[in-house]
Image (cartoon, rainbow, N blue to C red; front, top):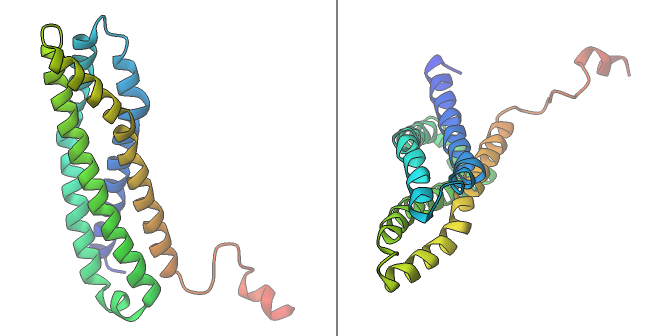
Length: 180
């Protein structure tokens, strides 16, 4: 494996970890912590500020993840074309990546829409209903991105295991096998 390949693979894994970790921290910590605000608008402002600060980092991680994924695919094109299990895993990983991107974008869009609805909710009944609907939507949507990006990490592990060959970490050393 070349230094280039190592850098590309490390970038791919680190950006996947950032995407997963950031979305999980948002769902598990930031959004619940924002609930300590005095009213709905303040709670939305707290969550919005955290996501506004994290957004550029997550966006860069997603972009670098996609670029490094294309580079890995180009580097392993023969293996992908010649090995059915690898090809299936790559197709699944591509679909899951697309799903994670769509979910991340929808969570971003719905979160921004929720903030706008909450600003008008005190004086507008339609905005109150929209805020309730978006709150329900965000309650499951916030967990969808960490779930799909966790799947990406699992598939990366699977694809890495396929490259190891026959011997594994827990296999007995070859000198012990010769004695038996």
